[in-house]
Length: 351
Image (tube, rainbow, N blue to C red; front, side, top):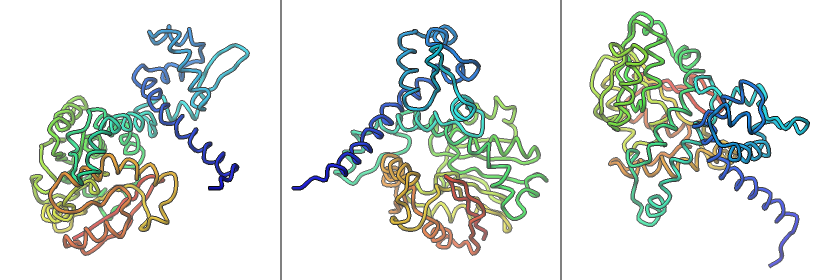
């Protein structure tokens, strides 16, 4: 065996980057849980000052800050030994209610990785692991990570990109939010369209309970209601809009879900499908974003589909052609890509 030392060093560089990122995920979640980023966004601080402001231990905070500075997540000024956040870092790390909040992704990662032993067993057996079987950080991480994207795009660009849907909802339309999780998307729709009624559904009862709480806290319990039901069994008909946000690819029977959605829609209704951005071929998906999605999919999406009847395992990088085929098999006759972001493709399907 002949080893090219330059190529080996290049690969070791990739390894060090990945190893640092893997362990750094835990530190980002610590910063999220303890409010360290939020406090640092308010004013620069030494380790002692930040610890005092957040009620934490100075020695732990010092080590945390050093690692954050080495990784480029905070800025360090050696002249006064103070740490701070740039405007861009604060934008991405310090506001969970803003249009971008990166700690939620790391919370989701750590929650998913708790299932490593079960997923390893699934590799051997070909079995599945239901969404409901994961650690609670998976559900909280999904809400924390995806909600900012919905805040930034859902009612400002995604729904407006659909033919005639904004007008229907403004006039008092009916919406079904299928696979709603903690109800972040349901609440945002109800807030933006005060005459509309939203029915959120998710097969995970604990998530439905939290969604009801979120709606009540927002004063929307009368217009944003929730039920524990699968995508193939959610209740109601005559919906102007049915939405599936980042969940169709998790289903073992997406065609069955699509058929039920079609039956639940009004004759002129619209199915809004938001899925991870992907090309149709593996060769076209060999990039950093797809790497993230394939990795999440191995731990969450493929096991979820395998745990359900239906025989489908789309995965998080299925691509537009596969999603179109699901819609067409269910009887939808019109399908188009209505919008996209760096992370999501937004499709419109009509009967």
